[in-house]
Length: 517
Image (cartoon, rainbow, N blue to C red; front, side, top):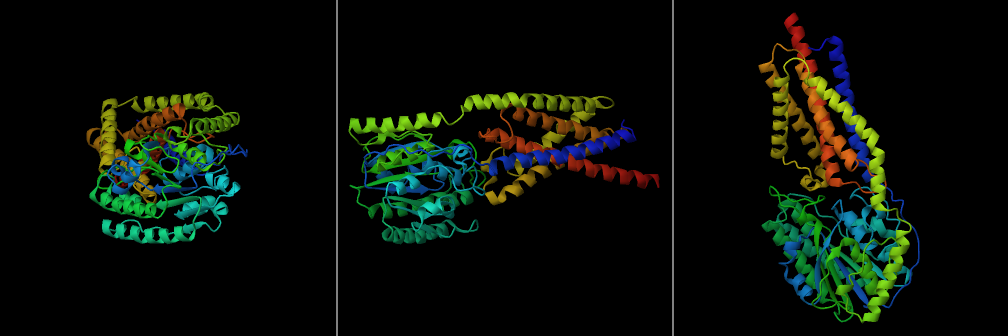
């Protein structure tokens, strides 16, 4: 039984732990969203002879690999060239992926780690290299391109207003895409360029609203495909190269989609290369970072200085000596970059070693608190209440549509609501555990504080394990975002339990005073 001093200490501890959990969670999130790359550098590498006069890059937002295989115009284009699949990076969000497409750099190098907060990438891109070579550039797409590359694009940018989220039928989204397509065609006619990017985003909206394996998604992506076909037909295939790629796919869960996590249907993106300089009947499988160096090879551009990908040479239609020259240029750039980037594996090992003392101390602390909470009276009843607490938490976790994946958030604007649901689920689970204790161990006072200490310690041990293995914050290397997201939810669960325990303290104190009166 806790005495008055023990009760006060428990309350202070839980309040401090709850505040600390929110602080650590916020700092971890901030480390990713406010990240600024330290790896940018300038270097001018040799250019090459172009394999095409013009290249049109279609960014088919949110298109899954399985759905891409069903699209008429995209598959007609694939039959003329080299289709494939590219693995996107984490987080599997649109803006980090778009930056990767045109810089050849993963988010930890490009600096674009999220959709909302980023500076223009300080690394070279196919846009800056094309401008330097005297090639014209134009982009028709979302505001991201203007925010990220506006100084380079100049007047070669056409923006469409982003469609409204939610509440729109598949037919309405398709009609919106058709209207945007007409604007794109007018823009392309007025801005003929050597390098053109066209963003088609209605498929992503349908994926979010209806799920990636829904009839609504199929209807809207068919409209996207129709737009692609219209645009392709306006160019001379003999002198134009077409590259069509997705930035991510979509899950299909409870009638909704989402992305950001590691699900195969999210991180595998379709790619089609066709037209001038592309081998018919080839394959183009690789990583998303491979797109920028491949575009550079096709247009005869230097390799981007921070490029981490490879040229998809197996998809190129060029004499052996031209391919050898491309590989030499690629090798020179990669060797130069390797001399400037720290060894990632060695760096991660060093970070893990540095985290060791803090992780060990935190683990010892939580184990000691857990042992103290379970010691004394009614340990079995306390353990049973703890099991019930976790059982209710995970039942609510599933019932509320939560998951240990960023993809389950559905949309970025739902993020705070997603986190709030997790906090409430943890608080409710603890509350049920307290009710169970009140029924089975009514004579034992203050067991609810020991329960809170035990439950928060178990959550804390899981967070400590993640911190020890992969880290919670970004320090120059992207942490394991799947494990980090789980730890983030565990930290918020600690806050939920601590908050509920403080509420229980005031409720029980009021009840005690009422009985005493």
